[in-house]
Length: 177
Length: 293
Image (cartoon, rainbow over all chains, first blue to last red; front, side, top):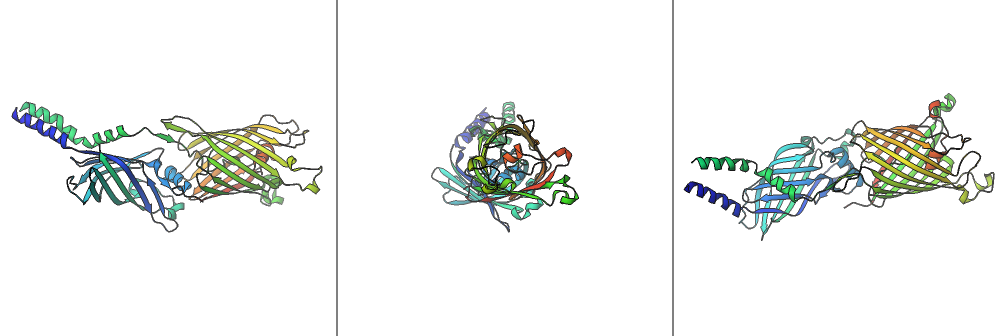
């Protein structure tokens, strides 16, 4: 009975101290350098929840919300490359490693987990930074995605327009849930 | 001890599924979204006529369209290749729904100006609508013949014609899109012994994608109120769309040499089924004048 009670206590404690954060502002952008033209796009409609007690993090990107400079590029991105009518969402499920909620200043952290893009799920590990600013948390990361890994094809005609890999920059500002 | 094991049995699966739970929680907080099906066709032209597509905010589309002569002209005309009819045009996207354009067609030296507005978008989600509907209107002036060459005292008003169209399309899946085009063409001055001022027509067409960058297209305009003496035919066209970066190439076979609605819908001169087929192409190039962000 005593074991039972203490276990219950631990469970309750973890619920009470487990702090969940949700996105207040988000930015996911990508950039690819190519000989003819650089391609970049930005998405501010991504949502995320981070549980600082367990380190678990999930995010969901509506892929159709990437805004490009060129209308035609945006259309091709949706129709031909990311096929967003079939795969409207990209998600990440994973853990943040090395985060300490009570530390001040910038912390080097890692995110490990499964990224789903264009219907393909891959294990990824990326590094980034975390900063606690009073009650708010800012997570930033910059990493490379290889298009072939996610079955995103580049037609031969347009090879000069699209690089094999793109640099992704994410910046999320969280508030307590 | 038994109780502890039972409790552990309950707790451990919930730990293993925590990330999925968190994802479910995230999905609960997301506002419902609407998915739009905006890419029914690759170009603003189906074959000869218009499609529901708009060029997009801030984009300027240059179109160069060309039709050779009819193939049944025989070896003397090198099966049509000796002749050439051209339309050069520009269309600018004021926003993602509204486009404005001008063009010049060598057939009857015609200048045209038009407006295109996407009234309804095919969508799924918080709003559900099965069709994309675009309204199209143009005004065109024939600058041929010259005033001194005309058989009657011709005025600017005589030279004008107008078109009103509803373009109604549905993208059934990634491959198949179909479109209907109820159309009115009004010509200010005509020879009433052979034709009417107003022509009512219904166009039908579609595309089948055969790869990400290549599609097959077809289009037909049926006229309802043809004068029995009218020597013209209903316009038929088939084509292949090839998309490469900022360009769309459309290679077509059609029985009309015209590239404005007046000429295509009401003045198609050749019989498709008697070799009156013109080889042609439309080439578009998109320039982004104003950045979207």
